Image (cartoon, rainbow, N blue to C red; front, side):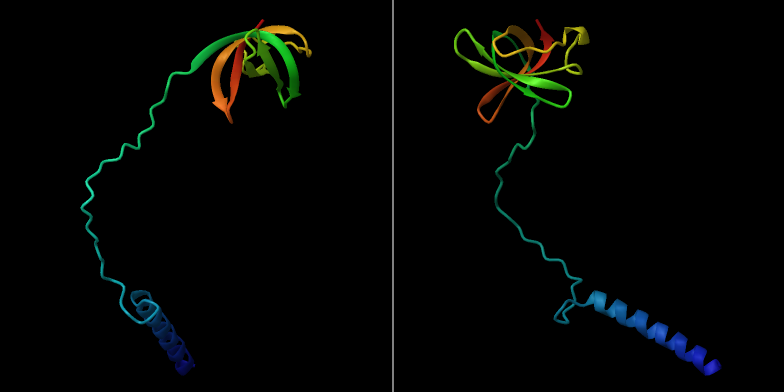
Length: 131
């Protein structure tokens, strides 16, 4: 019984010693403890900071050209008098006054006010006011 315990302890010690040895050696048997530093002479400074711009608020009045129903509202494609096309996202959570929410139909004239941004070359408005 003593021999079995001694053999088990010896096996454990050898296993731990071989694991520690493999960690200190690279794949080809070369130690990987050394650190190599590479100096660069590039002194160009790069500004990677993002500056938040103030949202552009826009009021658009026009005729509804199409409607795309969404999960909690809809997106109305609006064409104004100058022929500019806007996509207004209209939903209860985005409106300042939830009582302003209503369904619109193609051909209705509406006025929306909200934050404007551009996506894929199309002007988008997150409506905060609907008239």
